[in-house]
Image (cartoon, rainbow, N blue to C red; front, side, top):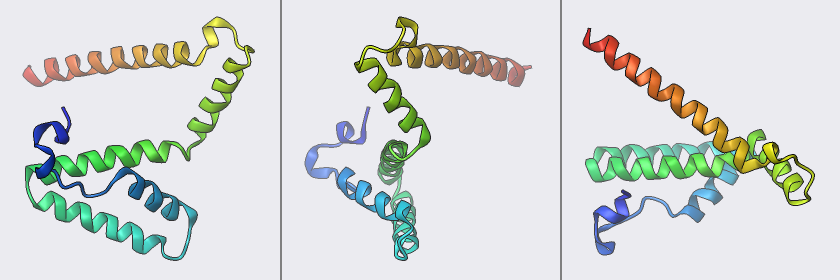
Length: 127
């Protein structure tokens, strides 16, 4: 459930809109001289929001998840995924190498590992 679902529209005041975050992230990653100031202002806004209580903490979480999503577009993983997707569109992949199949298989393996680690942690912590 998102913060927008928790509060009626008139009560939700977003720290940042997605487009604003995307623009700020572009500047921060560009190495522009004003990038450090932009990053400091972003962090200050997040700190102030966290200080405002649970709603602010939930908003900071939303902002951070959005920043992670936007940052992904600038990573080598995104470049590789896009190349794989283009190969798929052109019909140059084997069925087992299709992007969705590869990604879902990796997610499934990792999810099982995470669940096993959590069970082990709970069992170990209760002993």
